[in-house]
Image (cartoon, rainbow, N blue to C red):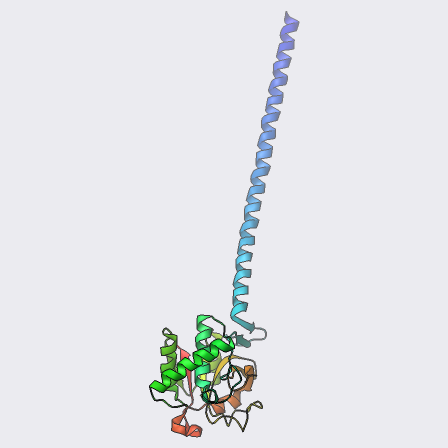
Length: 260
C-alpha cells in the first residue's frame, strides 16, 4: 500500500510540474505576442506619419515646382506655379477680337488657376468671347485699364476678391508668388523683349506672372502661342509694367492685380 501511495504522489507531482510548465509557456508566448504587437503598432504609426508626409509632398508638387536649395531668405530660391495656359487667340486666328484679347485671356487663366480647371482651345475661345460681349455692352473699348480688369475678374469669377497694388517691387512680387498666389499685370508691349511678338509687340499688353528663378520672372504670356512659361528678366518686366492710361501707356502707372 505504501508503494502504491508513493507512485500516486509521484504522478501528482509530475502532473503539477507539467501544468506549471504549460502555464509558464503560455505566459511566455503571450509576452512575445504582446511585445510584437507593441512594436508593430509603433511601426504602423511611423509608417502612417511617413505616408502622410509623402502625400503632403506629392500635393505640394502638384501645386508648384519648387527649389529651396541655397536659399538665404525665407522664400524659395525658385518657384513655378502650375497655371493653365491659353493664348489670346486660342484657335490661332489673330483677327479681332483676338488681336486685343490679352486682358480676357489673362482673366481666364487667373480664374482657371484658382478654381483648378484646365483650358482647351475651344473652351478658351468661347469664354473669351463671353467676356468680350460683356465688355462691349459696357462700352469699354478693346483696351482696358487695371480697374476695369479688376471688375472683369470679379464679374467673371463671381467669387475672387482681388486688389490693385501700385509700384510693386521685385521682392514683393516674389513673395506673393511664394505664398501660392499668381500676379496679373499689364505692360507696355513695345518695351517687352519678346522675340515672338510681331511688329515690335502690342501697344498694350496683359500677362500672368506665375513664378521666378534667380534672374527671371516666369510668365504665361498670351501674346503668342509660345507664351507658356515664358521668362523675362526681372528688370525687363519691371520696366515694362504700365497701365493703359487712356492710350499713353509709356506714362501709365506701375500696377499689378492679386487676390486679397
